[in-house]
Length: 214
Image 1: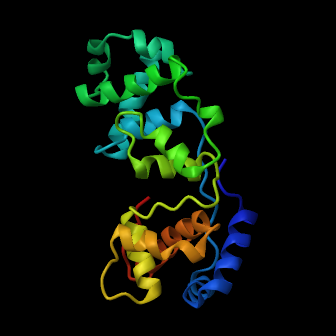
Image 2: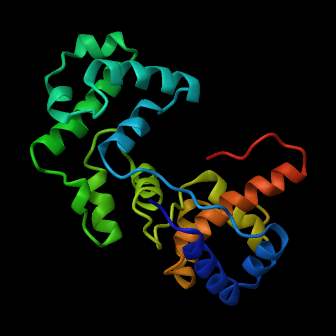
C-alpha cells in the first residue's frame, strides 16, 4: 500500500505553497518515488527480526523462521513454537519475546491490524503495545503499509537532518522541535517525510556519498 505517486504529488504541491523552502527543494530534486509496504503482522515481524542486524542477516534469519513456522507466519503456530526452536533459527531471547508478543496480541484478539483506529495517535498506541515496536516503527508501518497521509516520523534521524537543512538550521533539530514545527504541514506530513528521505539521498549522492538511510 503506501502513498501513491498521485498522493505524493498532491501533498507536496500543497506543501510547496505553504513553505518556500519545500518548493525550492522540490524544484531542485523533484518528486520522490512512492514508498510502499505490506499490511499485516508479517511486516511487523520483519521489522522485529531486522532490528540491530544487517539486511543480509535479517533476511537469512527471517528465511529460517519462515521455514520453521510456514509462509503465512500463522500466529497460533508462533505462539506454540518452543523458544528453543526459535533460538535455533537465529533469534535472540529478546526478539523471541517480541515475536511472541505480537503473535499473542493478534491470536487473543487484542490487536486487529486490519481495523486499526482511524486516529493516527490511537493506532500508534495500539501498535506500541507490541514488545519491540516503538513509536518510530509504528509510524513507519502506518505510513508505508497503510498509506496514512499525515503520519510524521519526527524521531527519524534523516527526517531531522533534512528538515533542518531545508529550513536553514545550523544544527540538526531535535525530535521535539521537528514535531512542533510540523503543524502547518498537516495533513501532508507523510508526503513530506518521504520527500525528506528523497531529498537527503539526492543531496548525499551529489556529494559522492554512497547511500541515504531508510
